[in-house]
Image (cartoon, rainbow, N blue to C red; front, side):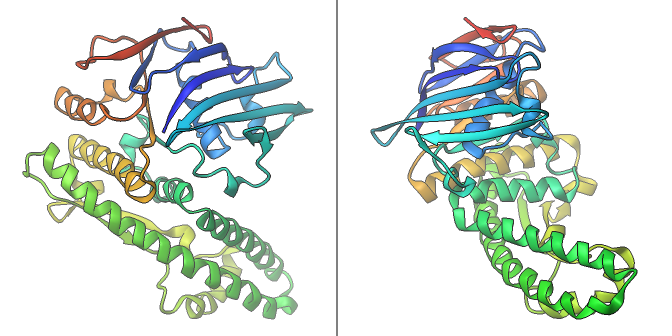
Length: 358
């Protein structure tokens, strides 16, 4: 699939009337703080219905505007479609509305998969050495694109987790409602077991692909492995929740569950997070992100759109070359301050200044 046309107004500083994108490589270049990342963020927003950077949707609307609008015209397997995303400010809050072919998308789970995207930013290069929450996000954002059911399970799990945590705080002062904990234990177990199963399957798939990619990059000098580390065992999920009642009441929060899951990256059997060099960590992250692309291809028979936000400047020449070789057959939107590092042919170039493109 690929984006044919892009337009945006009022989304951060963007004022892009309409640009036609190449189905191959598109380079958005210009000085810093001109809106290049905002361009990528707008595409990401149309795919996931949320921003990677903003704490709330209201931050996405230009400070001197009342609304923001993004429109993408796309082609997928010979079918043409229009995605519209709109944010309207009401006080300090923003009302979000997204439509596909002018039909409102009522639930976020119905948005996932309409625009298949893989995002790669400098923050992703720190996937290995960052905390577990980054690796959980890595799993969740990818799986949600492929499985609306998984998104629903996640939403219900965290809804139950919020209720259980609220009850735990009440129980710190009043133990009379303690029996109610079992209700939320059952809810967390139900959705938690389903999430563990899906995450486990995903990590096994991505491990197999990332392992091959990593061997290619390192010329078989290193072997990368990813292992799913659930925060609670699936065999004794509900029993472990019950066992932790006293501890959870004392803390006022749920100690164990899928919200503490992690992925362990090892290179030649050694922890990449604790003992890997910066170069090894970046190669492992690059392998994992490129594996995402292949998983989408295998699952949907479609090629996703790759968003590269100022990544090349973070990679050495060898890794740059490998990455550029991998993007030849899919639509890519790249941001950078200059084009001298691109050793590829047949790309379309756009200059961005103060949110406008030429």
